[in-house]
Structures are given as C-alpha cells and as structure tokens.
Length: 146
Image (cartoon, rainbow, N blue to C red; front, side, top):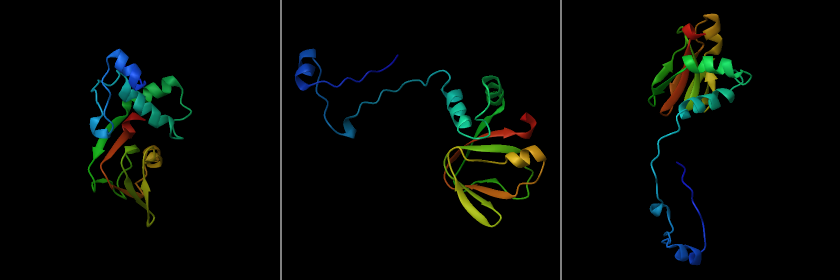
C-alpha cells in the first residue's frame, strides 16, 4: 500500500479530527515498508544505464547482464585490486568512494564510475590499484560471465 501525506489548514485538520503535528525532525513519523519486489533489479539497471558501457543496451541484453552481475561490499581501506593482478572483473561503484591509482596519479571514483573493462576483455594485467576510501558497494561482472 502507499502512504499519502496531506497538508491542510489547522481548522480543516481540527474538523477532520486530526492532531496537529509538532514541528521538527525529531517528531517525524517513519513507517517501515518492504521494498518493491524488483527494487534491487531496478536499482542496478539505473546504475548500468548511467554508464556509457550499457546505455545503449536493449531490454533483452540488460536482462542478460542482470542475470550475471553480482554485488560486493568493501570496507574502508580494503584493497579492491592491485596493479599487476589479472583483470578478471568489470567493477561499477554503487556507493562509496574508491581511491584509484594509475600511472602515478590518484583520483577518486564514485557512483557509476567503473574500471577493469579493458583488462576483462583483453586478458591484460591491471594497470591500477583501487582501494576503498569509504565503505563501498560495488557491482561486479566476472570474465566467465562475458
């Protein structure tokens, strides 16, 4: 079911038998609700569509990707991958910040940024080191799934 929030005048609220809500965040009512059935898939598709790699995919291709993509969490300061390792995954950041070092330069990667796609397709070694700067949620697709 859906929750509706209705704003009305004090007089109208009194007529309807409603109690006036006190102002302030501490008085906010929070109603726990189950996420919609396909919320996780919808969230992943939103991220994929925001990347240039998947933006042009049709529905059938997107369903194929959804069937093989996985989610993984990394703790702050955890090494995600190191330079010289086999490039076995395409990784897309779902949340958090990653410090990405390549060719002596470091930059921050965030929501919808990705890496590992070139090495995934060419069997090359990773030219980068990626470390979680914060807690990170990542979408990953492995070489065996391509």
